[in-house]
Amino acid sequence: MKYADALALLDGLVNYERLARPRDEFKLDNIRKLLELAGNPERRIGRTILVAGTKGKGSTCHLLEAGLRACGCRVGTFLSPHVATVRERIRLEGAPLDKRRFAALVARFEQLLRVQPVSYFELTAAMAFEAFARAGTEYAVVEVGLGGRLDATNLSDPEVSVITRIGMDHTKVLGNSLTRIAAEKAGIMRAGRPVVIGRQRPHVMAGLSRRAGVIGAQPVPADSRLRAWDIVTDRSGVAFSMMGDLGAGRVRLALLGKHQAENCATALVVLGLLTRNDRRILLSRVGRGFARARVPARCQLVRRRPPLVVDSCHNPESGRALADAIRDHFGTRVVLVYGSLRGKLVGRILAPLAPHVQLAVLVRPDSPRALDLAELARSFTRHGVASVRAGSVREGLALALERAAGRWPVVVAGSFYVAGEALTALGAVETD
Image (cartoon, rainbow, N blue to C red; front, side):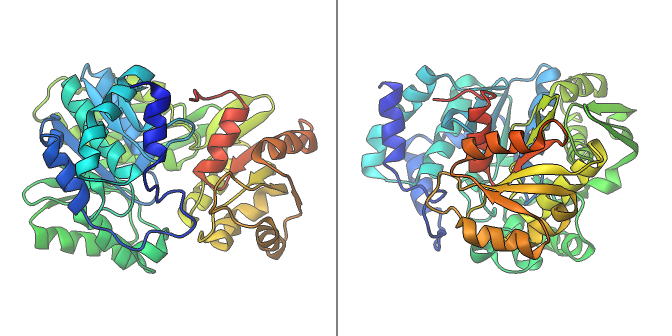
């Protein structure tokens, strides 16, 4: 099968990420049957780390991948959504699948799909499991797509489950309270196995701990196993001191935002649990891996002079994190290129960002779910931010750079679609 044919097959499947209306029904029957037909590759992929959460799960996965690879481990990683090419979703040894291997995986499932159809996301998850099984990965780092309990990735058998910070997102699907959202995330817990829980609001942490008790899982609050202090930021990243199961030392990240120290701490706790059975995992090696880690579209510094940052910020938690990163790393207002999908809590996202925005350039991402620019403009007006409109992300980026004129940093945010289009326009990512 040619790569173009593989993409065409994928694009012919139901893709809930691009539908104008959110998915209103979730069940695992279809993907479970497809995996059975494929010989259950999810059971042949080494030790699985399953990561759910609202904020930080992608960064935590990238850090776990980087840390394990620096220790000499063979690692496969499944991430979603992708930024520029679907091959980013399935990574082997730190790199997206090449086109030949990706097409071969689609061909592997082509006949099975005639017996048991699945969605776009479900097929990519099944392909990841198959890729990891074929490659003989020692560790599979798997990011949950949506929620946890009924996500296709939850058919894996995690040795360690991870729940990063929980916030308000996908409320029409997961529920309109943190308690309900947390209950869905808790579905990735396993009896008799640890679940590392990142920093949470007290009532959310209490709820997750109670749920772990009901399931028989072993809750491991990250803050109870690792202490971090002396967090320092500059225009090249974040550094902090830590003490935990891996030992004590100074960790340096080439990532923007103090929130990355929190994600890093969660990853360190997970690695501290894994080192009990894998003596290759040492803090000195992990630290070298973390220093090299790059996370696309998460406060990604694409240019330094003038500063240009691309972020996928699309929920209130990420809005606060981006606002803090702007304050800590730049200390000045920015020109913001912003576009959103419908159904997002735009007002709550903008509230912390507004004081840091000199001018907003509003764009419409290439998605049927894109939020109307007139409605988006009203949100910025309510927050006292002047805005102008552009026809596309590429045009918006050019306009923002012109208006910034080297005086202010330019920040792109609002969704993975906006981030992907911006990084593509800047030539900062591999595309199809």
